[in-house]
Image (tube, rainbow, N blue to C red):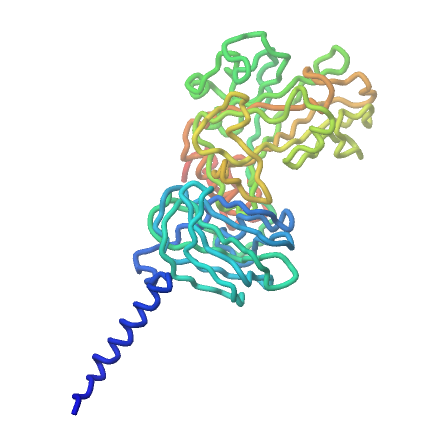
Length: 449
């Protein structure tokens, strides 16, 4: 009589046989995510094959907000990928699908964003929230969809990647206040200091090489200005710590130079949807916004919001109005790019190291969100303006330059944190008149509390 098999030994034998069968079938044995593994995809730059519209960009799936989503065009295939910033070991992916889900899709990793390795594949996706334990490594992770589960596109509230490695990022925390957010900004109020045919960014060390510019902010700005010289100079700004240089083409009525009077407003705002992720400008960053050779269409269709020129009842004019109500003034507003490449303080054309957001999020090439500058300059000119012009030409050649020189980075950080990240509408010391209970970033003397 044959001895009976041990129940434990029998069960272990079945498990071993199952594992052998899985390996023979070419299927990976996947371990659950380690307790030490963390979320490494949040706030990382993302791209997608397409998006349904401006409010549904790739970054919406990596912002930690279950109220925003990426949504693709209604076609196959589609993909959504995240750049982890460096090589990472991937242990788990969580997909939180909106109603438009993927029935057939793969999760893939890549070292270079070009050659991809499958770490998960299914043809029977059911949507909802899917937690996928995977095993792989790479700098990039993507969802590659080949068959939609509905007649719409692919749509994800959140795409979370867990693991170790990548580029360590400490996202600025999302505010926990309950006030309604209508603004996320503070002002720099700076008066004119000089009119000079200089441009220390475009023509450094070459006095008189440029068309006439009107300078506000740092009182020492000239063709030879450097970060060091600006930090040692005085300022016309209300906040004495703002030694930055701001300048723009001078305004003429015929041959008469019309200089702005009093403090001009330079807004520091959020240019991205996740305003709490905006970081302060790095010391010495400089760039040019707009172009003295722009056409009307190029000015009007700039990627940033363009208010253009206004006076009296005239608004959003793409050139200087030919006539303004007597006693009024000509205002011009134009927004700067607000995504930095995270490396270069300048570039050959003084623009390439900066980028406008795409769909409300910074693109992978320029992953660092910095304040979005918006110059609001008021020229006291009215009546017949048919002969009005800028030193660079027609109104649509409007442009401006910025050279960051806040003398205390902690002061700028406090204003960005309290006002931009905090969802406030602040004055130069970080106080929101409409929300006094939130306090101010700085004291009455513009110092840290």
